[in-house]
Length: 64
Image (cartoon, rainbow, N blue to C red; front, top):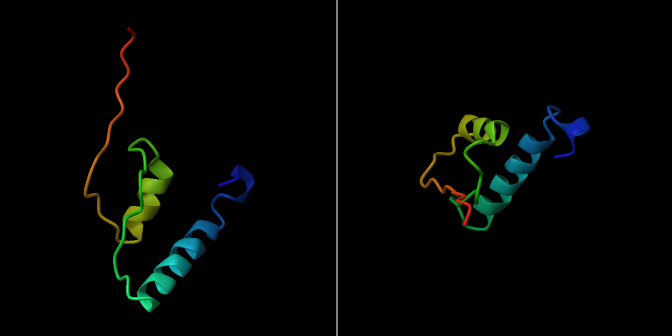
């Protein structure tokens, strides 16, 4: 999300529209995709919308 548009509810509107259309087309559940565990804003929004974490992916870096 472009920084100046954050906190205005645009993301919530998008999530709601996706949910409505998914249910309407027979898909009552789905996956939000890869949301990094340090993406606090996205994780908070997902939790508030009732999403649950089913998997945690981590990327490790090691110099060769």
